[in-house]
Image (cartoon, rainbow, N blue to C red; front, side, top):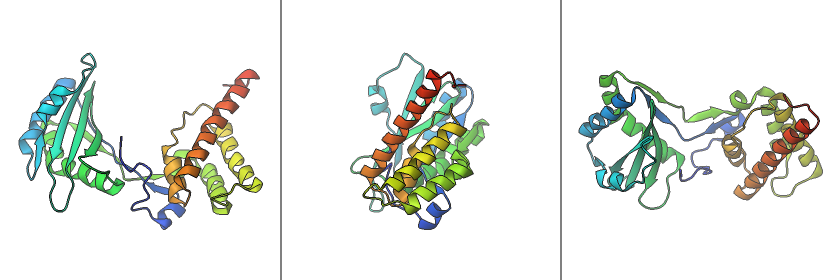
Amino acid sequence: MRAGEFSTSGSSTEATARGITKVFRDLTVYGDPEVLDALIPGIESRLADGWSRDLESEQRLPGDGGHSRFFLFARRASAERPAVTLAMCAKGRRLSVTDIVPDAGSLSRAQYNSILVELYLRFLHPAAEEAGLSIELSSDERSFEREYGWQADRLLKGFSGCANKSITHPADQRRWMDFLIHLHHHRPNRDYGFGLLARWLIDDGWSRDKTSELISEAEFALHLLSAYDAALGLAE
């Protein structure tokens, strides 16, 4: 689990107003399975400054029938940084960073992304470049408008900007339902992952409890509307 998934650390009021949310970055390398496996020693040979491969812990990981291969890299603690373990998983033609876990406490998004970029710039990128492999490092920002569309972005901002964020008012409920109906009506078959919506709501001042409540409502509402359409023969 990525610690601090709903943390507001490093959030910007200006960015939220523009519909941009800070997110955890993803790092993936693409290539033939045997080339990806050979990349791991290339990364390991470049490790320095407290980084090492944790072979002992790797060997204790449960297998999944050989479909995935897991690799662990540890970074020692120092006065400026926590000790962490970074996990990578190779499956098919993809080698991805799946998690970064601190030895104690939790990591903010900024800390998580900083560690990921350190591994990428110092060790993984040179090794992957030498092997001729393609790498994808995602941005630390996601645009709600780009993911959900400009109309959904306008409806969400209208709801959140006017809402009482502690006590639900009928007018707030109506604006929230307008937003959910829009999602269903314009993209009825989309399987929404509501992590981005949850982070946007928290960055805009909603509490964790109210955010969880709204996300639960959204999931139920979209399932209900889809079932209703199917019962009437309206589903595509």
